[in-house]
Length: 249
Ligand SMILES: NC(=O)c1ccc[n+]([C@@H]2O[C@H](COP(=O)([O-])OP(=O)(O)OC[C@H]3O[C@@H](n4cnc5c(N)ncnc54)[C@H](OP(=O)(O)O)[C@@H]3O)[C@@H](O)[C@H]2O)c1
Image (cartoon, rainbow, N blue to C red):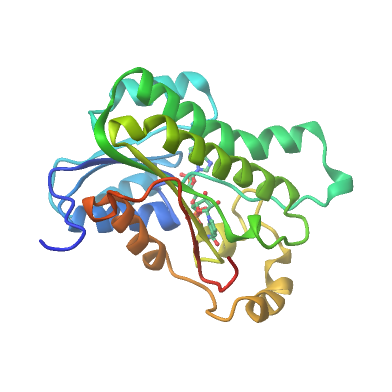
């Protein structure tokens, strides 16, 4: 299959019922990989499943904010060659309105869940040597936006965690990397009904586009990079954070 061949690899993708995770799962299946897709919404997960190419894939619906659900997901997993942590939410909160509940909600799915899920997968030995782990951060950790304090703090914590994980797992050849895209055209930013979705997106879009000359990305733009980080072609890259969609480094 050539460059970024994923034949024989089994990859878990969280947040695969929508947006970047969903497109990533489809693209992995086209590269010959088997996927385990996870998301909360069973109907959207089934729709994503139907778009996968080839067979041997699994779909497991779970709200991962519960530790029990994380345990059940890990128990149901086959041994993995890669994990793509896409599940996440945004929810703009100006600094003076931040309450404990906002912190808990924002850090739970954006930071604690990927950390606890990774820990459980390692404990249960559900990941092979030379596997690849990918975390979705955001360019906003480098370039703040109004109301983004909690979201970017949670993602900054994830970036720091990923580097430590890279060090701890290097002896097994397991790699850990972050991707930090700019704005990507997904329901996270386009669906007004989406939980925590900011109505400020429209208002700030013009300002945003001035800041990011490459404009808005598509899920495929991020999936392309994910395929590379999952493949053996990136075997010598770990602890990295790839900024996408901007010239800001
Ligand atoms: N879109 C952007 O502009 C952008 C830019 C930079 C970084 N990112 C990051 O990229 C990742 C994917 O974003 P996206 O734009 O593809 O978002 P999306 O379309 O809204 O998808 C988010 C996914 O996360 C899942 N999810 C949310 N809460 C969950 C929970 N408690 N348990 C399990 N799954 C949960 C959702 O499941 P259900 O839909 O089934 O509920 C959905 O599959 C996120 O981590 C985001 O922070 C996005």
